[in-house]
Length: 528
Ligand code: XUL
Image (cartoon, rainbow, N blue to C red):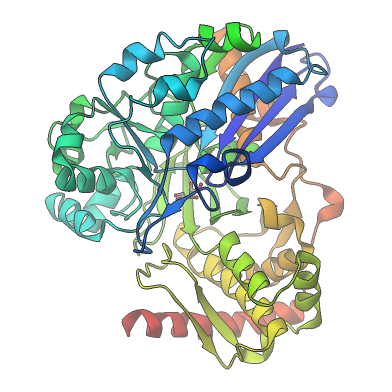
């Protein structure tokens, strides 16, 4: 029986999920192995906090690409050490990575990738290949002027959104590349290849420069969403000579190589296929089973995201959301909120609570919070765009711990609902995933605000599972035995029926009014 491995290199941690697939007996498919560690704890030498490096400017947020690389080595070592799994059955590997982050490497990188020495630690062999020591990540919002310049060159935000699926966003890779080229022209000139986190880690696994998949490529403001090729006018408007520095784009199911000798000789893995990596949200789409239109998923992770499949690309007219290519070949609509887990943790810590105490506070307080609301912008926000962070309270006493707990959760859910209206989907069912989806008090607020049923999924890590299932799909395709996406996900991503939460009609009515008040407060704050 073959084993498929999915890795997820996320903002704060790395996770591995391996699945066991018995074709003859779909009911015996199972998750075989799950392992995760946090960068701050496992690799403290990089000095990250919550996986990132901050500066005095809250808009600038980076992370070391060497840390992501070392983390990959570390998790592969952890896998190999687990002798309860017969890793010789490993057929294919793929991965998921935080989106938008860029990795800049010099001309030595190609040769180095092909000659990684199993007798030496991976990190020691990569130290001198980065032409930029730290990578801007999705939490970075420091490129407003570059966004404006790119939009202007392409005929405005709507024209750019029609071409690439999104207007220019500060965290998107194109504006980030432009900033680097403007501020550090020499280092930019010394850059041979600009990878995404996903394509860089795939390159390490395969030992050759790997392609970028259209799912993650859609987060760059550089890809023509219709053709899934680089858009020459966008590439030209971004930075000089960029066309020669971008890896090619290739379908998400492309086999980019086999596990390089480094992994085989050092850890005893077989020559498994390496399938193009993608972004965490595109992978989660597969890992939550959203391979057809109708249902949406909400992931409550470091960022909160809401997404669902779209058969054809319909860019968001109000400029808040994104259309990405889906790794299934269709498209996906998505909105992203930066004040997700870190904002929830902020409130929890400010009031000295544990998670159970946070939940208890939520269940003690009434839906609608007696009209008290919060705009939860602990950090600069992506949706809606807020560059100057600051929490605003309306009729809410900062000293009232319980009311603040309810206020943050209600604010997040109302914001998710408000800023996904552009997708034009009547949401009747939501699959909840990500760390905070374990909290049923939070999910009840979700059900009531959206007036929709909410179901929890079996696995919290839908991105790593999605990557493993993408590896399975691509492996079968490469063998000339393709499977439909329904057959790929069967048996894995079923929501737990007993987890179903139904909206409470009285609460739904409360939120129908409160969301308009929230929207007005948000508009006022943004215009002031
Ligand atoms: C997506 C985004 C975030 C990151 C988090 O556009 O910015 O969801 O992918 O990992």
